[in-house]
Amino acid sequence: MDNQAQQPSREHHFYVSTAKFLFHHPQFGIVAVRDPIRLGDAERLGLTPLILYGLTVAGLPIRWLTFSSIGQPKSLRDVLMTAWRSAEGLRGLPDVLRVNRHLAQADPALGPDTAEIGVQFEVADAKDKSVPASLRSAQDAARWLPKRYEPEEQSLSSCIEALCADAQKDHDWRAQRDPGGLSNRDLEDRIERWLNLPMRRPAPISTKEAGWEAGPWLSSWQTSLPPDRQRYFNHDGLGGRIWLLLGENPSEDVTEDDDIPAYEEYDNAAEIAKNLIACWPNSPKEIAATAGITLRQLQWFISGRSPLEQAVRFDLERLLGIEYDERTGGYASTGPRVLIAKKAQALEAVYEDISGGGDACPCEIVPSQGHADPSWRYVLINAHGTPPTFVMAPRGEAITERLPDLIMNYEGIRPVSQTFYRHVVSTCARACRTPQANGREMKEFAERYQQQWVNCMWLPD
Image 1 (tube, rainbow, N blue to C red):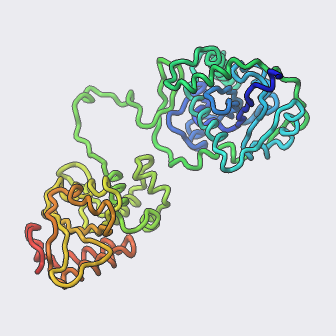
Image 2: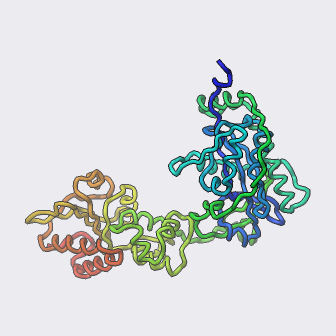
Image 3: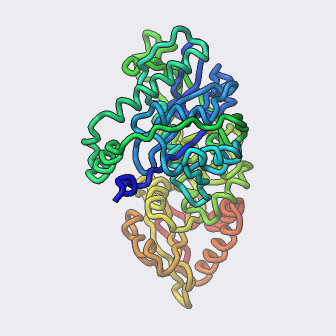
């Protein structure tokens, strides 16, 4: 049998994108970005974007990368031919070259041209995540490329030339080393089998219609990035590159008094908001709209990725019932609010915050006469010195059965008058209609029963 026929199918993933983590700076040369930055924000810092081109062996951590400036993109055919001739780890021509639809549309003649040299050109469909995964992995790997070649000057062309040499050197080193030590014997074996395949040197490829059309698809990764925050340049003494890091430059504004600890506020508002939203009757999208922001802005804020404008943040804190506590130097949830038991960890955190660590006598209220609500159980959190908060727990759900464990000092079931119980049920129903209604309805409820909330130890008859 022909030995060629016994060899496994060779597949390469080919991708092109604006580099997500590498830029050029006229003073610092190639700058690596620790956290992604929008191109417009990068430009304001004097950073020029680069184009990343790459080929990855399907299913293996073997890739070859090269770069160019935005203004002088490389021919896709030149990139492919250079890779198949000089990248030992790719083992030459593949059987299949897989690309995404954007790259295929940018150069419609590329498929027929690769077919002329015996390479099957395939466009990945929307459900195929393998090519995007190869691109993401290449983007991340690019920022850690060791700096082995020093450019003659810090010009864009010189720095790109040195970066390409760094990428080629890194590929050569990885293609020749023993794949052992990956903690995955199957992967080690597959890498070894691949690197033992014979090389397939390519024949010249057609250069007609060599141009390709760039577009927004090159930088689609930036659409999900939050607004930029303060950053500073920092030299990596070990790797030799300049990094752009988030935060304030720790080397600036150093005084003799800097070693004296200073009192600082603990800004935990985003963390509290995250837990409250996880227990809120309305959806995060409704909460965001009420606060005058997008859902994405809200998600960025509660995840700590981006701050909100002061006025918008104040509106959100007021909506959720979050206030600054001068005694602790941090923020706290004050209520009163109606919450729903959805996520155990969030409910436990919210209760500890509202009760000041358990300073409350929480209990489930039921009517002393008549029937209880068939769908919901109502837990009263009557923390000392604060208005009441109600937690609605769906009957029959696992989290409801865990309430005694999640709510510290839980005192079980407590009968109340039928009139009071009906008022609790109707108040909670109205409070759940909109994010604004929550605080309004509960404040009216608390004011109506204000005289009875004595030391949070007594319920109305």
